[in-house]
Amino acid sequence: MTDARTRRPHEVQPASTRRAFLLGACASAAALAFTATVGLPLTAQDAFAFTPPAGGGLDAFTALSQQLTGRASLDATLASRIYDALSKADSAFVSDVAALNTWLKTHGGVPSDTVTAALAAQDARLSKTVGHIMRAWYLGLVGQMPTVQVLAYEHALMFDPVNDVLTIPSYCRDVPFYWANKPMAA
Image 1 (tube, helix red, strand yellow):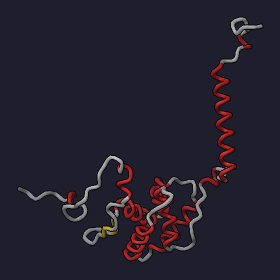
Image 2 (cartoon, one colour):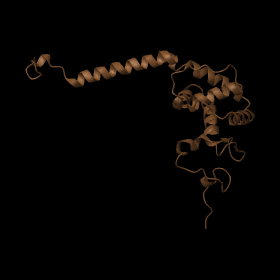
Image 3 (spheres, helix red, strand yellow):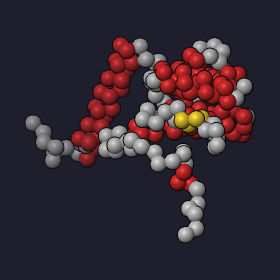
Image 4 (cartoon, one colour):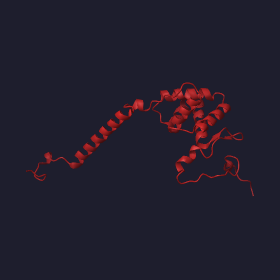
């Protein structure tokens, strides 16, 4: 019977190396088993696949919004209100939605938080459209002052990160962004 103290240095295999190998092997096996049973894609290219509905209608807008916000589902009533308001505010909005869906489909690996920066170099108009969509979802606002429309307040996505610790204020003291104006001199 040999003891680890009597083995030669080249015969001793550290426990941490074996442990790391076993943990890595188990994690890989579990990931492959989960992927195979759930039917998830196995390649990185497939993982970022984005297949929106054709055209620039409400369904295409909702798919685009889900991709941009990183959310699996969005409020359907709010999506309809935002789509209608943005369509009325910009006559090219419907075609922009179709163009953005096409762009995202061909650039599937672009993370949603860098889409605006990536688009700014290629197509400034589409980059602005992304900004309008994100502003509508996160702030609940469409348009610019003095004709800004408030479409959502309580359901605006800006409150989601802190909804477990922050009570949404139930009143507004003035028009949107009233706090940005300089106060009157005393």
